[in-house]
Image 1 (cartoon, rainbow, N blue to C red):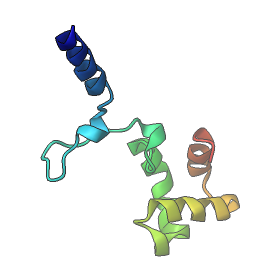
Image 2: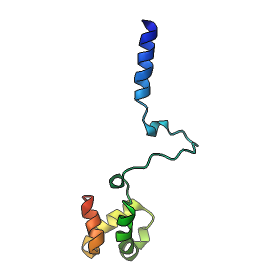
Image 3: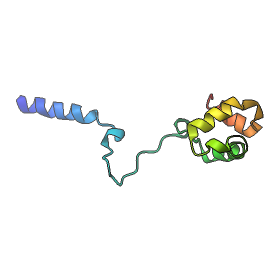
Length: 92
């Protein structure tokens, strides 16, 4: 009975481990990719649609995704229609 309880406890503890917890420092395994709607940069098409706007309106903060998003939000009226559609697609 004690062995069965320990096996069940071990199975329960292993079920708590997620891929993020399994990533060890210095590991060569890349983290699992997030779906495009959870990544700050979006899909490659989203990036193509907004890259010109970022270069034109937010060049001083390019490279910092959070700052570029804030810049886009502050200058929303100046965005090109394709880039504005990307922001609206993600509810930003």
